[in-house]
Length: 112
Image 1 (tube, helix red, strand yellow):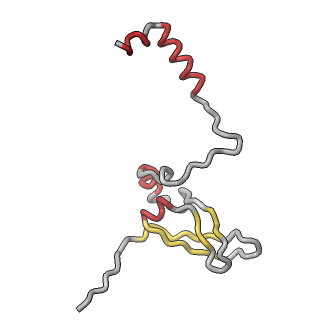
Image 2 (cartoon, helix red, strand yellow):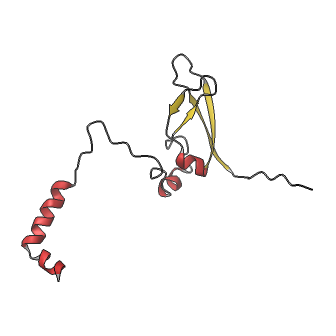
Image 3 (spheres, helix red, strand yellow):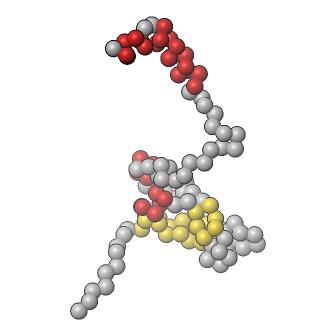
């Protein structure tokens, strides 16, 4: 006798979205497990087939938001730089501290 096995995972959340396809606007309900929520980047509309880029927000999963943030929700998504590029906000202070450390003789201590 053969067994049929269905993997069971607990659903975390079901979010409701609207398709952004031109003239569509169909409602889409997306059910996600924890693993799927970590890697969620959007959905495909069942009516028109348009791929909708999307991301979960704290309002979608308030009870689980902290846990998913801690377990690298953002780390699994590709990082897209802003249109103007990355603003290196730490370059100035790091350079000043490095220069100050070098003047104090810290560079000589590191080499030995």
